Image (cartoon, rainbow, N blue to C red; front, side, top):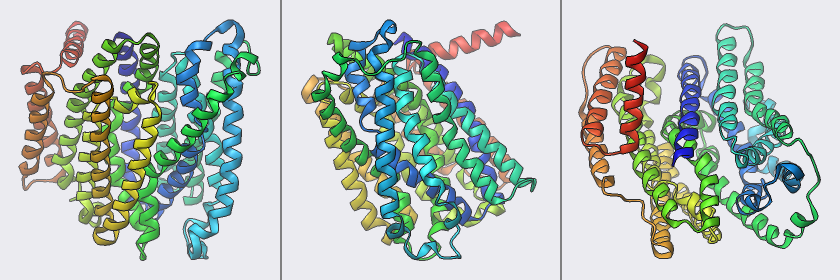
Length: 495
């Protein structure tokens, strides 16, 4: 766990700093943008996001399965970089064909003169190009154990660009159109930079070697399952926003805007998992290569425990402060949908508490089952959204995510136990779960009648002190305790 802890910590810290900028931007948005304008940004992200996840052509799966075998600086890793660029370009071309074929059907009469999205539809192909490039080449860079740079670009640099854009808009230096252009640049920049960085990391640039292309029959299977898994993942990640836009007949862009704010808030819980997943995927691939089930079990167990504790803390803080946040005048009209955040947050917490289960399956010889689970998840998400959005609006979309993720993570856990006897639950897991559930209940009744800023400050401080005192006092996680002791030691030395 040494490499994982070190690089995951760096990635998580960068993500937290970037999320600080991103959160500041998101907090400013409801005060200066109309709900429908926020909805435009969410739609640009979601529509392009569907294509980048569905059409990366399984390159990351190919990397996980074959790159360890061909890792060699002297021969340019047998041309893996060129393979990634070619697959990316194929994915982009198919994505553009599909997008222009479906554009009019999806938007329908919403591309009339009054539509806010209409002037910006041409930006979606640009996003498809650079975001596919980033997804694939960042995977290549990660396999070279450079896991932090992608986090830095996507989790920090893009957030800083976004924050700069909204500040320029706030001070009327730019109008909304130019703000959207800068937002798109923030999403596209990581792909552009990663291309040059991948080229820099590969001094010897070659076409795919004969030996590598000899694996084409195997690669075809990875590509097929990569596309299938990617398509289902795209549905999972973006179906709620896309279905809200299509199903809700009135003010759909505004509803997307409201939902996107709560969706972003729930995704803050996933920050720790991103740092762990980026490096654990590499380590798991190497562990499977050695058939080191003991190390895989160790990663599985520790990831579930630590992510439950950290994610649990973030959710408890958010839930304790949400009512106070929604007391601000600009946010009072968002209050009707606060339970969208609750269900989305619980869904993320369940996903965190199952550790790196998907990564373990994805890097094993049974990787195809991850695709099957993703397909099931996509179908469940679609059906639940189809039923619940008309009934409960955007809160229904949150409930749909909760049900779908809970069911599929149970399936994944049962599969890993029956196939490899791997379980995520160590001796302290259920203690940690009881602590987290107890604090969720505590946060639900932690209410005052004070100024919202004062309430937020009190709730944050109370939850932080009590939560971590209990975690440390009960010694729930040796890794977290060591980390906190290191921070305490460094703080004492600096003073």
